[in-house]
Image (tube, rainbow, N blue to C red; front, side):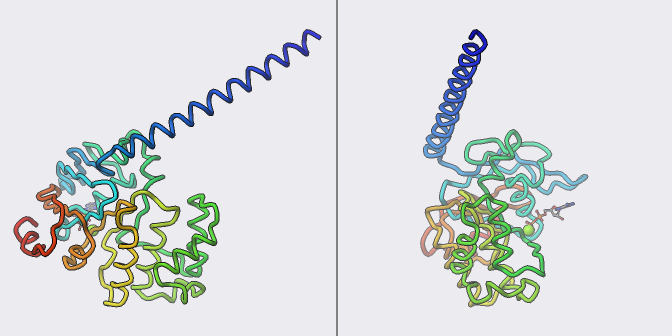
Length: 268
Ligand SMILES: Nc1ncnc2c1ncn2[C@@H]1O[C@H](COP(=O)(O)OP(=O)(O)O)[C@@H](O)[C@H]1O
Ligand SMILES: [Mg+2]
């Protein structure tokens, strides 16, 4: 009898503990949602430095990407754009300084950055033997998406690759690779998407498809895109940041009918 009562008590306490901890985690999620809502910037880098031997690839960079903006990240070849994007997405660690993604330090909590960021790398790699659809389903499963096949179908449709969904990726053209990588970056509806030169080397038709796709997320997702095409940037971006020799030299809201080329030649 005594043992039975002790067991009952143990079970009751365990239940109480479970209820308390799930309440705690609910509260934590709620707090983090409130914190994110009142936040002005989705990404902030503070005095960010990345050294490769003696070379300063990123040299004290302060970058502020407003929440739900489309941020054009501009700079000449070798200015430090790819390195910065790789640090923000926790792919590489900085030598010093820090990055805050949705208010949380990437150094302290790289998991939060990885969870909330989708990325199209400058030179994305694909399995040539998979079809575009299988490729998307594979990554949707990895991302823990509820219905991977539905997600794959919707994104391929949205990016304009419906007809190529069941073609093996090895047969794709450069433009089709870019479209597939773009669709992949948006799997699981990440809050932030980093696109490293999404329009480089594209013909006008695919360029248009890419722009249309990106614009459909305007105001809903924070998008950082690095590009050399000022025309693209002025059509797409709400903000720009110009990086030179690893430092931010100009950061501003874009204005209608401004001459981006003039601004770039002055700062970049
Ligand atoms: N893994 C690396 N090892 C050594 N140097 C690197 C490495 N990655 C980038 N760099 C150097 O850092 C600088 C910035 O490169 P990167 O970030 O790729 O510039 P961007 O994307 O603006 O063209 C360049 O001088 C480049 O050669
Ligand atoms: Mg680059």
